[in-house]
Image (cartoon, rainbow over all chains, first blue to last red; front, top):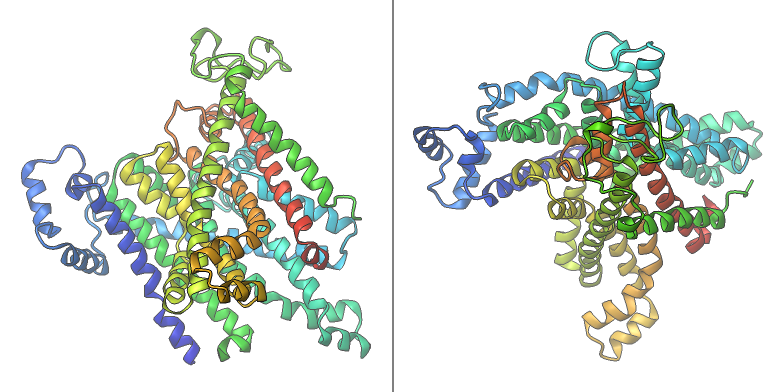
Length: 304
Length: 280
């Protein structure tokens, strides 16, 4: 319980860092009013926003006001949509979460299975082939993979839609693209973790007491080897998000990532800031979940 | 089944990397055409092995009739330069911070390492997007964004190594003989880390090249018409039905270079750290 409380106390730190970073970058450009309003703003509008953003006050106070606005969910008004930026972003969040969840799930499932296969048949054909595939996968630009999948399954064979959101068939190609981007690391980490756990004394003991290969693997090795894989989920969240931005752009998936990229081209800074904040919150919450899962699996973490 | 050992990996990796480096260095001289010269009479010509292909444009042309081979050759320059320079930025920041945290300990350690922890929780793509949204794309912005995103891996490794090296007899001897902190760090501790840092830096270059091409592909890297592999791929995506070779040749170029760097890095890791490679 103390571990959970201490972990919860750490939650605001990365978020504050993100907010501070955004604040500094916005102020570095000189006049944030110009960025927030776009090109066709009247002087009256500028004056109004200048007062609203407290730009006549000292910098630390400005930061406090900025933070207070964000905490109330006020990210300003979107230049493209003329509605509150947060509402626009919140509407897209579900699509992104669906993609992230499916992609991560598929990547962990495939990665763990392939990693275990590598460890079981170490230095034999499955290990050799899967390890080569893993290195090749790490070198594969995910946007090209997405484009290859579109060419083959959507254009040549006509089995799946090229882009957009609709039934389950719209999910297949984006999920596969996102998962392929993550699978190699899960294969390599699972492989090493299983191999190292298999050398532990309790595994030797289990074998000596007559437990057979498959039984030792599932009951003794895997439960103890899974923790590094769970940590990897936490470490990969940033890459996962980057992969989602790319995947959403390739497949015109109506999520936060695609919104963010198009907002940059429209110079719609309120949307960019709101999306960045939402994504950061998603990642911080996901990291929290990963840590809690780890603590639940491994009592040693709770004791620290 | 040790056929694909470290030697073969280093060999293939080095061959690919050196080949690409040669192409990048002699781009002006190798490229058959000006990569930016448009010729609207020669739009979307296929590569030489397809019907209607010709040796005039061995890999075909793009939507503006620009020679694809020349654009890919010039693109290698930007990818390699951005990857290497961004790696150097990350390496310098990360190593200095890690050395200071590990050697000085105490409050420096607390501040640097907690900052690294919090920083790790942020996805670098977000930082990149905010910066590009506000400042716009450009090669300096790109190098700095990618470099600043990747420092904390080095800090963690250098920190742990420094802490253990500080206790070693040769470092204690240097301190006892009156050497200053800066001298000990630069002359006794840093050289010990060269192999580990080489491996991390090599593998990071591969990741940075992928990130650069991904940002270019999203339109957040160097603005078109600059010939980067990511830009060429993005242009090819819009012409998939009529000219799939544009996207696929750019993708092929990216994977060859990144695979080469990755093989080199993995091979070096197994060569420089045989104990770990043997265990894993």
